[in-house]
Length: 332
Image (cartoon, rainbow, N blue to C red; front, side, top):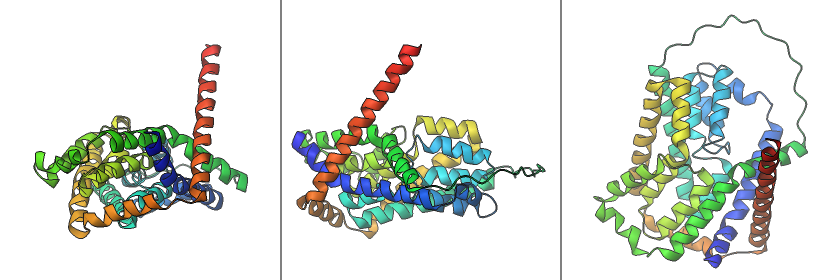
């Protein structure tokens, strides 16, 4: 079990750290009001999805961001497009997916997230009431201070702190699946549930209420594919799991209403199933399994250093959160 955990860390850690670093650099270089400004107007859905796809926000952190964007004037369609596409992807998730499942799978997932975000946003604008015109006078505010490299590092660490708990869960579950479950178990899932479509429906039923981030779900999906789960079902899990959970569903309902929630869930359900079927039609499963095996065989000193850094950071975040919780308990 410990050897499986360590091997998964060796494989995942370099890409996770690189993705966090890229996110920090983007935060450093882009203007402070860039995202909010882009999600307004007629092209808000396109802009919301384009901004959301590379942004490394998990399914919990995307909720307050979406609420904030809506309050700042983003359209309903732009908000839903952002909420659908953002938690499915992110630069860290894409790199980890490419490392564990291959670049064809990772790029296809990005494309599927983009399409579902756009469709969900357009459908939301079609069923939503037109926004009321605003007559508020602009308020002059001083420009925000320029961001520094220190801000980039702090942002990258914040991103890692947001996902570390689910990352630990994902690694542990992946190792447990690899060590304890027989390889033929998930290979027989398609036959026992009515074929590959049945396996996708099972993955969908598990993924929709499950709370898991895009990065932490990758090692789980990789272990399931290695154990015989159809790659299309794994794609369904990686799309539906991060994009939905009970908290997100409740937030969308309170923020945008039942009609938009129906569009939100319907888009994810239909889009993930369609994406899974299309992926299996276009790309053979052997391409995924060979890419997965290839990355297992080559580990360098950089993999080891990255894994140690990730373990140390997770320990630091755990101690920090425990200390904060104890401090709050003592105050009350």
